[in-house]
Length: 235
Image 1 (cartoon, rainbow, N blue to C red):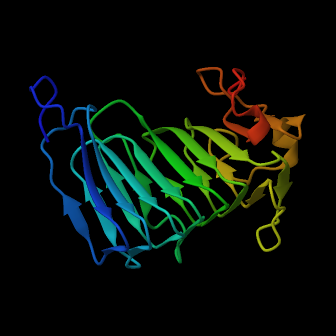
Image 2 (cartoon, rainbow, N blue to C red; image 1 turned 45 degrees about the vertical axis):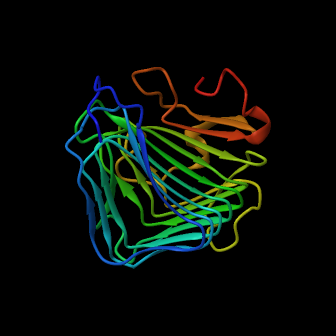
């Protein structure tokens, strides 16, 4: 991709499939432009298949993965230079057989960067950890269901669901329309125990951890869709 300042209007390079898109084994997308002025987008109008255990490495900055169907990532490692965005118009299912053994890593070449995870219906994640370069981690779906997930100490986490309810230890029987946390840690709140109800203040539709980040934002916030346009998301 052209470097910032070069006279070329192409800033998004897209690999798109009218039906299915598959990644088998480890893949590296080479790009010597490390400035955050571009993105690589991989998209599918059908199924998006990634072989279990694969690693996706992008040498450039921002990477987006998207599908009109469901997306399942099993033991997948993703490493990008800038921001990472993953979206599904169905369910997004991310799971690791050995929690923490592989990471979603962002911000290799720049300031700390962001992770955005979106699904129309369900985000179900088990065993995912992030590198400490993740500044903001955003998840949005009708139902968000997390287990054995660790958030870095200084990450600002926003979890948005349809109703904005907050429940714990409900992974096997999640509350539909809510945020469900089972053995989920934020290392800025506690390094030796999972998040629990007493870590939060607020009510249905708007929960914030009592612990704040240096920016003043809560370590973890929970919101309902009805608060999507609220200017007080991080307060």
